[in-house]
Image 1 (spheres, rainbow, N blue to C red):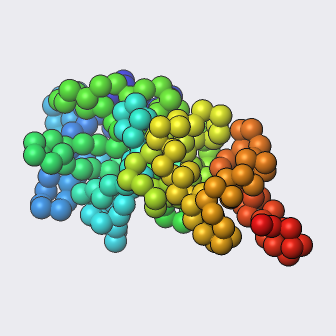
Image 2 (image 1 turned 135 degrees about the vertical axis):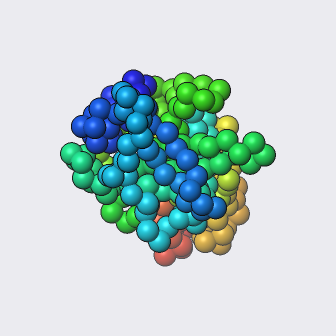
Length: 245
């Protein structure tokens, strides 16, 4: 219960009902083929219902989440078994955060993640360490990623992930965070190459020719999408002026 899920918050911080009812331990159990629930154990060993964690209606189990793994090296889409939303109970993010429940293929091990939601019903999550698994601790950068004070609006991060994951199966947290200078070339190169090829096709020119224009238009530290957009504008301007080869 004292483990941090985000940079500053434990499970009890995210679900204030835990403190209010003096719950010592939180557990998860399966109630049907597609349903799970969290419940608490108090200091006397009694089972206590968690009334502010409610199943998300209409999304289980088909809603896709942009999941970040333990160390941030992998961001990928995943369909989870269940989603439970934190409702009231003193939580300032009422309805916009909660927990996903998944089961690892082959072993049946339950995996828990903490999610945040945008106004457009898009989700991103980070893992929650469990005492009965051999999960490694979640890295600080990943915990910071969903800390509300550091990242009050996660829409931009989710949009970046969506754009990349349309082209490839995974990326890394560095490529979707708010710092364009720390992108990992090994995990981003394939995405950028596809973006450049598609832009060259739109401009009806060779990839090599478009890359020459892109190189002139690119600014240091700028997202590749902005550079490509400006390069396309330059190509279109050259076409209108009869200056392109």
